[in-house]
Length: 235
Image (cartoon, rainbow, N blue to C red):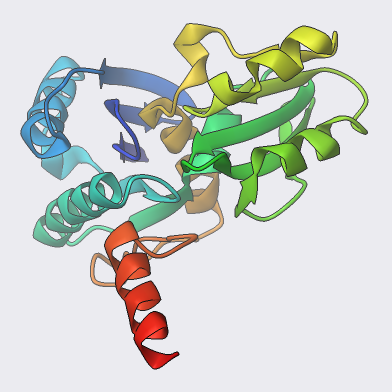
């Protein structure tokens, strides 16, 4: 089974094709163009590199959140269009789980973090042993200090990854068992989406194109501001 996986949950955008546990083609860009400009051309070039057509793909996967509201919407829309045209299933992947999947062959605790601004991160913790990933908590929006308190009681190697990893550099410098992921593995990547999606597909955890939905841990800023104004008027 071939899966086409996409990620545009933050600044970078990436595409990957996986078959039977092997990434057979992938693309990654981190440039100052919008995902609406880069994503579909990347899909075309990645499929061309794999010598595949869109009809050869058995399922489509996407990081459906948490992440950039605009990026998530663009990715969801792209996958909906591709999957609906081919009448193929879709696979929803947690962005934070896809980060952990990048370390599937490393025994460690992965602290996946995405910058949610205002000293807050989207976060989840995962334990990896012998290639098996165990989720230690649900995806959440949490203050960085709270994450650090939890990390302080975890024994063994801790790898901090995701676009919010830089917020924990001071913590990593002061703790010998904590490491910021190396640059090539630090950020969200469609290869991680593909790995997570393949396992979900084996369990039959798919949705239709119509059923594919974004997963937000909090309201977009515009909606939060509108809600705040409404509450203020009601005082």
